[in-house]
Image (cartoon, rainbow over the protein chains, first blue to last red):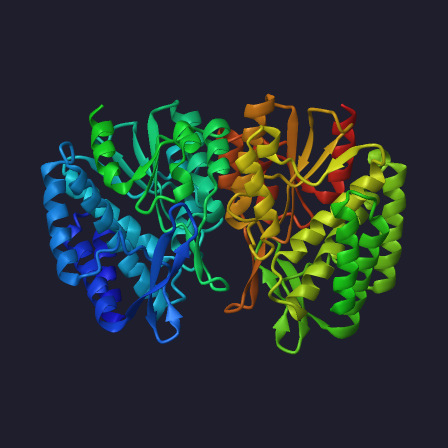
Length: 314
Length: 314
């Protein structure tokens, strides 16, 4: 894991300074992917008992298993993955406006494979670092958007408190970011994730909360959206929630649960603040149902790039 | 711990059926208090380095120590505590309108001692049950309010989703409640804590979220207030957040941190939804500062009973 951690440190360093870091991110995920392929076994674990049922695998080192992985999305062959990553990068540079269905699926699967490769490395070799996969997700997505939108202005977070002129709250956000051992971002975290604007002085933009297994934290992006609406007027900032891997292993039944809270999401969407879109690499089956789609469209991460490009040109 | 668990089960059983359970709750906390006094050592641990500094102690069984406890609030002598609990109960029955400062402090300290006694038993003898102290806090406070307001209508939760007619969300709330192993209430939890109304058919009332060490979950009561304001009109439901023990042991420096997020609370109060009051048995020093008091009054739990009685008679 030393090599993986060194690559992560390098990518994180450039990301934290808001420098382009696409090459670093690519090296990191390709390395993690190769390491998994070389040093773990990959086996079928069990199904999500949906309609149709969805098979999941796990990476294993002796008895330690990773989180569940979907073989229809995970690009298992290292050469295929490296080539796919490169092609996806070229597609991003060319712009997502005219992507075919195959290119949309490629984008989705490369993101899924990248994040899951690193997350599964941590699952089997470094259980304690629960927060790291989420950080990698953030670094990766920022690198991809920078590649696609070289002229846009990126920031890691909207420090809501600082923006609103409250110094004590700004200090709490800072403290929360430094508390790397806290899984949930610390008590005072009121920063959003990735923010993209047309230019640094723009008072409007797209907020992209990135979540791996949200659990009760799904309330956060809706609460942040409400604060942004209150402070800057409705619609100035729009949130697109991007998620991966909303699953739990069920050891007793050797099956996989897709963790879903469609009713909660509908409730927040209606009474807290409306989010502009919900994106999953691995859309939970329940979220594809019409009742959910009517309230809040749920699409693949392959569609996200197109939507971001379009919204920024609105 | 078997006897303690049996007492808890009995109190919880009556509470879950919304039956009066003051005697059960009292037996539970008095037993926990005696057990701690008899079977642990209580020692000075360290200070919170404030102005002035605040000393904390811990209960210990060999090398296992409890969460930090404030000796100025914890009624250590078992006879004093049992007598104080009884006197406090009598004061509640008589009504809190004319309580003296001493009676307000007695109320605060009895609640603090009760909750901390049970929490510390779980800290030293049953580490795994992280959720239990919070449940006891809820059972205890419900029993005290029932004693004070025998004619009021109590409910354990406002099931927001069910109230709003969303069946899938209601099912998620149910599921979240059953996931007792989840510390944070499960992914789909959109229920508030204790609710008090003048009568069962009333479409307005007081919502009392009860929290032991809130961490990032402090956003929840503000988000719930916002949803209630959106759904029922501003002011129909008012939230009073009640907290205990917002502290962390700092083993390295043998000191205690008071976990405080005044800026975050101010931000939520201003831009998410206004809460009607914040109450602590052990008010973090930072929350007593004027900048905080201007935005959201922070008072002792001794004052809570009076405020609830007044609001219900408004």
